[in-house]
Structures are given as C-alpha cells and as structure tokens.
Length: 146
Image (cartoon, rainbow, N blue to C red; front, side):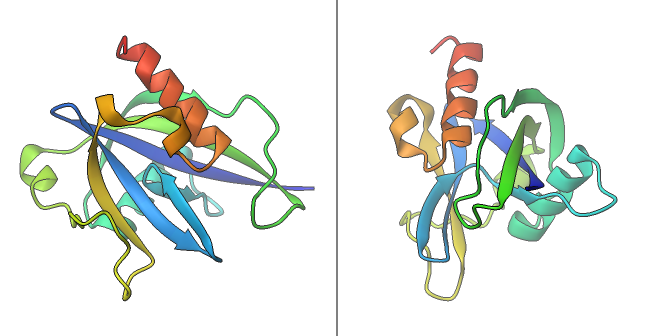
C-alpha cells in the first residue's frame, strides 16, 4: 500500500473559519484548504505552497493542530493510505481581506473549488466530508473550549 501525506491549514478570523468547498471526481468535499505533499517538501513547505496555489496568499503556519491517528484509506484509490496533518495558520489582515471568496457558498462552473468563511459556532463535525477533517475540527473545538 502506498501512503500520501496531505497538509491543511485552519484559518480563523473574528469567530469564522475558512472552508474549502471542492468537487473532485464527482465527490463534493467540505474541508480545510490544503493538499498533497510533493517529493522533497516538508509539511510546512507543502502548506505554504498549497495556500499560494489555491488562494494566492502566503500563509504563516502558527502551530500543529492535529495529525491523523487512525488508519485512513483514500476515497479515490483504495491502494493509498492517507495521513493528514493540520496546522493553525495566520495571515496579515490586509491579505485576509483579499482572499478570493465565493459568498454564495457554491463552486463556480469555471473552478474546481471555492472558499468561504463559516461561523465556527454554526459548524458541526457532520458538516465535514472526511473523518480526518472531522477529527481535526473536534480538536480545534476542544482547543477553543467550544
């Protein structure tokens, strides 16, 4: 079995959390922004590159939030085990204001993903698509005493 490492960032802003909505191979995903590690990268390098590619900003990793601690098989290839690593991240206020957001909460037809702010208090574990995202979100809520 092959292993893939995925790295995601959790950005909070005034009680909201940034969420990525994506459709890949027919699967609608509700998750934190981030993606797959490439050969020769470290986890923080992956996080910074992925945010630059997806959101055109240079995010700053602030601290480790969660790493998958249970066996997870890829939704898209049953021969691949997935390990996901989540970091709390920050951006200067002027970049937060410039994030390419879709206020409708949909994925535009000309894009594969979109980003929206969601009030933390209105989200539940069930909103997230993958078990790793759910576990990371639960960890975030515990850290924030929600």
